[in-house]
Image (cartoon, rainbow, N blue to C red):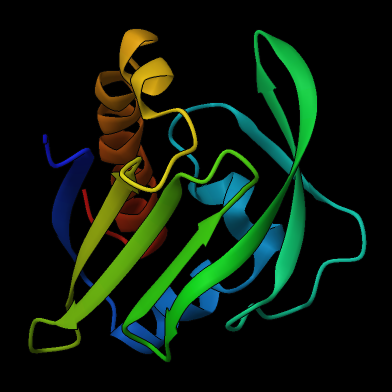
Length: 146
């Protein structure tokens, strides 16, 4: 069976704690998003995500829709992942890279999806890898990297 994950890693000129603060604030997710699909946080979201938190987002992929996510992996300043009802996950891993820098890996993981073959047929993995690269560009830009 295929791995069913796509990831991109980039070193960001900021300590893990500052990056994790962005990732755990759902209101900031539209600022990070490189796919163009995340529009705004919606509903009664927590100010800071933790294990088991749920949060809503206004999305647009062709047509507007809303999605509710649940945090399913969490390690303070190192790891956060969330999923929605289709089961696939968006995972962020942070590793200190010295001198106030952090190696950030974002992963789209559809190994836990309810219908993984549908995700593959619609070519979401390749599209999401492009979006992940742009997201990491946005993140780097927020901390002054070119």
